[in-house]
Length: 260
Image 1 (tube, rainbow, N blue to C red):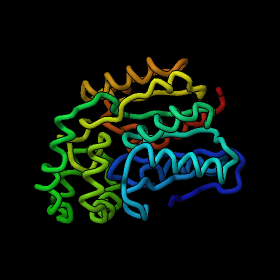
Image 2 (cartoon, helix red, strand yellow; image 1 turned 135 degrees about the vertical axis):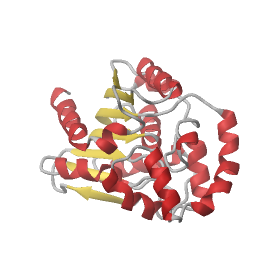
Image 3 (cartoon, rainbow, N blue to C red; image 1 turned 90 degrees about the vertical axis):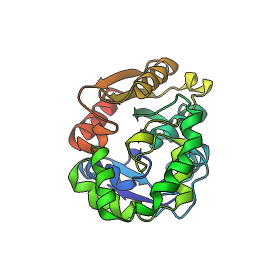
């Protein structure tokens, strides 16, 4: 597993899992804000630029994170956060190991199946993939995703490095960003009953401007995890908290760990 880390040497570990089509830079600013107190680890999920591995499944990504925590971090961490695809990986981790972290923040995870969209992901991407390296086309996609401007360079660079096969695979597995607005919140990762045994303190967050499927998914996740809290964030689009409000996100993580 490839990753970036900040604040190495601190005793408490935070792992943040980026959204589909993004990479570790999804949480770069948060890591810089937290590295004075915490060891922050930003994995590159499979199939993304710099991962060194093709995307196979959400479960395989989750298994890699768990193996890393067991092998390098003593079997547990203070907090795991995830956005979109990363949030789905986080749910898979918690379903298998409900005590692997004290706290978790699940942001904009889709868990309502959409077989039709999953089937159409490949053909739709086939029609647009050749345009990804066109900077103007990439700019239009980026603007449709409502991501803050200073991340465009990272987004464009890494979008050009993701293979069609990997992009199709994680589009089908999650509500990915890179395919644009029409597919962003369509595919999904199903909830596992074992999540009901999760012992972490979990916050579920979703943007108030996300579509109905995302809002319903957030409610389902909240209902499945005992003691979790649900917050619908007014005025925010998909991923708007971690991508566009990094200072607020970092402060939220600090608050969660103080209260845990």
